[in-house]
Image (cartoon, rainbow, N blue to C red; front, side, top):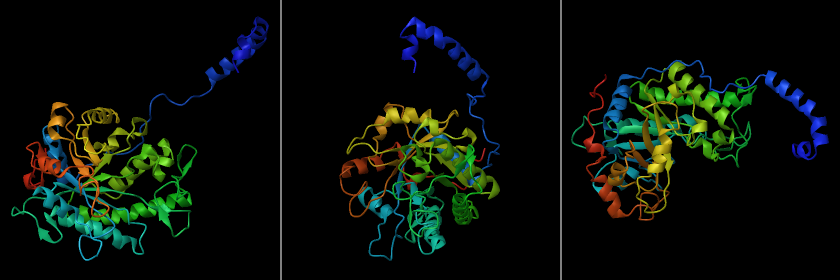
Length: 381
């Protein structure tokens, strides 16, 4: 404690040599570097259609906002009594289709047949890229391709070896294996991670074979701590992101992936070369149609890389595009989260009024599916 040292002159004189010795020892001790040392990772060269999509996003950035809707992942669009077709719901309410459809690999290591569960989402993604939904061609112009985005509510065993899975840290004790300041790649936990990534690679290869670009958003909302990857801490989470980027991009050759970092806090940002786009998940109060300018500006500073495209990668309430324009907060896209049933973030008027949804989807500042160019013929340079 420092207080007794300064309480009397006598104590200060006695303690002073000790303090000098301690200062000398600390000055000689090794310290962690002030700057982050980037890992030895080769930058992934994007596939042709991934480049085209990135160019399209860049050309429209700051000018218009691309509409998006997260679909359900626990059920297919048809054939089940609890089916929820979010794309149909958007069209019913607005007369327009979103340009982006969101998918989730949440079922991947969870169902009785993990591959088949993930495969259903892949099949729907291929269908969406082909301009279809529910086996129906949505537009007369068949050259239009819907934009695909994937997140991953990554379920892990509640305990290593368990047959019960979850992604919440209060219901699974799984954490990113960490030893001696790096990923513990020899651990049983890492073997589970590697096995899951191999399943992801097998599924995404089906999209790569067709050169379908994917806005890929893993390890989302990490700094919030409400998923096991965030509960593992910043450094392990950063290391896992960087490993995933290198393994899926370079080792597995998935050059169709466009990496959307969504950690929500600057201190959680990985090596900048592993990030293509930065996103923030914004859940504003009901009917708050503001631009979310503060979040937009904060998000732009989260990764040490200039001129990154900023997206509202998840949202409940849709921001007013005019307010976004006036505030210089033109998110690249928004993606409304799915409904849990007959009501939710889209359906009903709890978050977005029906008039607001129609207004946004029919606004000149918002790009819908019918306004997309042929993303297989867009510029490559």
